[in-house]
Length: 259
Image 1 (spheres, rainbow, N blue to C red):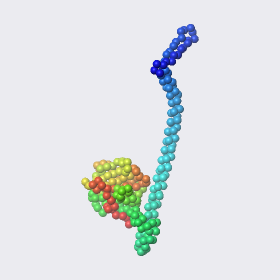
Image 2 (image 1 turned 90 degrees about the vertical axis):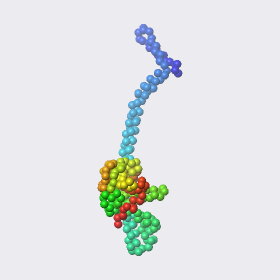
Image 3 (image 1 turned 60 degrees about the vertical axis):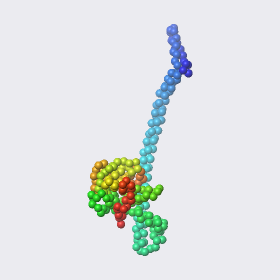
Image 4 (image 1 turned 90 degrees about the horizontal axis):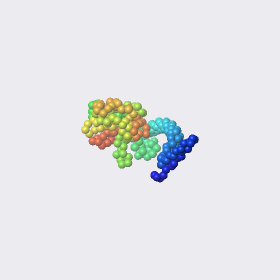
């Protein structure tokens, strides 16, 4: 193909000598492809434009549906928590009345083990017993409903407690210390870490907005963030951890439940 040519003969209207033009076949094909591309470009652009517009409209619709599902999920979660609390109170009344364990199991819709496990899902107290300059975590960082506790079991690991609270609620520090991290994490979303000593750190995850910066010194019960639903979170809540020498420990040892 490199040696093939096309010869064009141009014959003028007058008696002038005809002119010959000799072009390589590859050049002729290149020009042909270029002209075809120029003619087809507007159609391709139009198709891509309308496709992008369609995707943008679909993305907006999906965002609205996702937000609606999130609100619905949160309402369902709150209703479930209220039901669990009602059952817990009913079980307490049954115990005070001296009812047998079978009736208590019926109050929980299951056996005694389900009643015992449900006892961990209840409101938590934000009250403190230690001074605001204490480096020891004390109390909870927010007033809310504890929906998930600490677990170090294989396959069910959960390094802290989850507190269900509305988005935008205040989050407070639980110990005196220095802010060593205040930023976004792919799992914990907008996260704050407070180092209270060489061995103790507290972690606050899924916030909507952070009110502190790295290097700040905070006192216990100081507002550090606003709760949210960022990171790997399916509904508005606060994830709270206590780490001892870099290892997560059960934070329930450092606060009391609200009666």
